[in-house]
Image 1 (cartoon, rainbow, N blue to C red):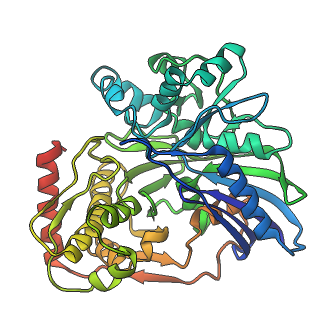
Image 2 (image 1 turned 180 degrees about the vertical axis):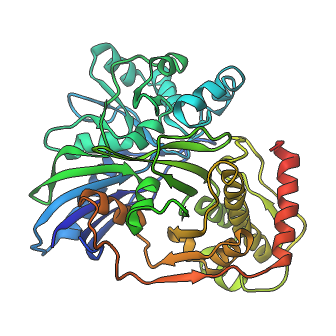
Length: 472
């Protein structure tokens, strides 16, 4: 049976898995990586550390194994960008995390005159989370980046492109649709870099990678002394949609990790949906799958905030019991790491409404994730056929109390599989050519929607408060 090497480069760790054509994980390796916050709104990582972490994870996954590896796939943080030198391959800047918001004041100055035009071309709202404003910042502030521009050796763009460049023997310099679009410089209709967007952000042309499909001959990956063809590259959240196999159009796909996303996959060109994101999650020969997406920045990041700001030790370990308690929590207006769809307020101040013990505030933060996801689902239903079920994945989805709240507030059955490696499994599925027998034997847990009037009332009150605070 064919085996793929699946690499998943995430915010906090790099993972490598061996996955067979049934979706079974045969071996895995992991290396944690650091995230630095040197100033408020800044979030940086070390590109050299990330490359080393991937190689270490691959070595661990392949240690002692004799499997014949047919192909490899790579999933990566989507909105994370970096600058590097095309001659030496060395980084010229920190890796600017998707969480980095250093340019939020400058980007807000473009909203009135250019926001709608940018959304129409890119499927994205103007936001400091995307790459373009951070590349502009690097060009303005880093002498090494300017020197490489002048010498015509500059390369910049999605982190996935940097990783492909560094990991392939051919030093392939290319970008697939999902990560390319998250720079906010890529036109989802033309499927290429847009000269007007480059001019808007004050960026010179000629230094971005070539636009190629998701499934493509990306080059040869050197994996623990083996030469493996890299056949698929995608963003992590986009890859996660394929963890269960070919996506169902009547299903809402929710991944809840450091951030959270709800996506609807559509076998048609990208739509224009006000106040939500659209784009391409798969381009493979003559097949295109587009998506409509709502995003929630304050998921796992909000649990980290609980520990740091409220002094709650190990909230993830204590939350399962707290979520079962009957006492009502306060409401939490969750703007951790910036308020995403469908509200779009980069500088929204998070706050509790009502009183509660620390444990109740922790429950309120978890409920806010369900409420933010539901607000996106409600808005999405105005533009695409209503979903009939929800599939959840990601580390935070292991909270049963969160899944039950999602089912209750949405009225949809919530299907959860034992799949903590959704992004890696999804990219393996694409790399292997979409095997017919994928995940056929996988079991799943279903949380059926149960009436919960108290929760419904809190959601209505929370939605009214958010409308009052944001105008949306």
